[in-house]
Length: 143
Ligand code: ATP
Image 1 (cartoon, rainbow, N blue to C red):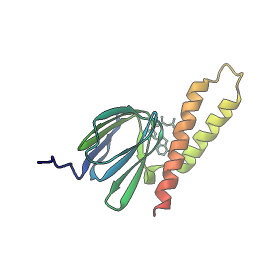
Image 2: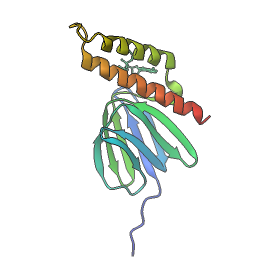
Image 3: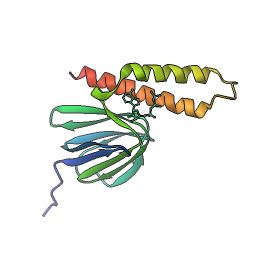
Image 4: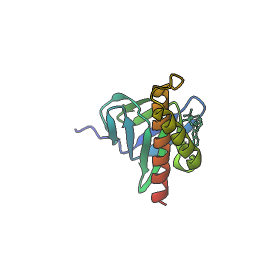
């Protein structure tokens, strides 16, 4: 007898501060460090590092978006656990704050020879800001 595959996934997204999602979902798209991973119920187990970007998940026809930054995701056939440094639902994102963070990071990155500027830190801040702006945009287009 063929083993039946799970029809849903339990998605858990937590940060050091709070639990952002705990839901039964039908698919998840994760911004992994080597690219996006599309996860359906029954997926083979894996562990991936996160990259800053939009994480999306479907609950039937409804698609929700979260901005995640660094962390890890563990995938099992019936569960996805995301441990993220930060995670905000699209509607929680303060776009003007993210635009300001993006501008600050871009200005720092232009000061190539200023020893006060930590280029790596500025690049990471820029990636977080872009992830938030992109996620907020996705969240708006579906409304
Ligand atoms: P900023 O310079 O604006 O603080 P940041 O990228 O340095 O941005 P983080 O250190 O990644 O901010 O996050 C600090 C906290 O603020 C986290 O709880 C994160 O969820 C929240 N946060 C950061 N930016 C935003 C935003 N644009 N909208 C909503 N929450 C945000």
